[in-house]
Image (tube, rainbow, N blue to C red):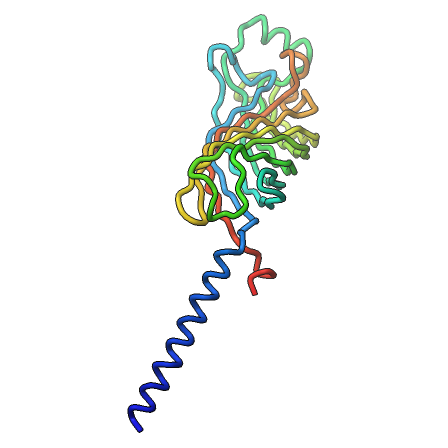
Length: 235
């Protein structure tokens, strides 16, 4: 009788073990076509009062982003990104430049943050059908469209006694991103990513027309990417 019980218990254990292994094998064969990514790194704003860019005299501020990515084909991803970048004027403008700003009623200083959201297709240099078989190193990049809300405190002089005014700007922009990812596990990548947010306005900083171009944001981020299966599919 004891031997029968022992055989029965062993049979049940082996059945459960084989079933679990079969389920794990099946789940691994299911391609994880969704990716969540988190990035952080230095950034700067190209603005009329942003600084002297040729001599690298401008403010470096942090930027943070979070993305949700859906793999559409072995090459193409669709990506939605939400983020924030802090911005600040910089450099030491010359007296003629300050006089010009004063006559035009332009802001000398602008300090605040830009919140942004965009959607863009992204293209992988090395295609892959399943996350398990992706290459050790891959390059990706793309461009899209987004909307940005910027709020700053601005002053029309460098006087510490002047009280800053609150200003807000909402604008569209074109995000351009490119990154180099390295596989660090079956479901995880680490990437170095560069981003340009090319806005449609020259008034993020309250200073218009001094530089040749509109105001734009630039970022360099270290990004963690994680492949996952949505709960609705993981049943």
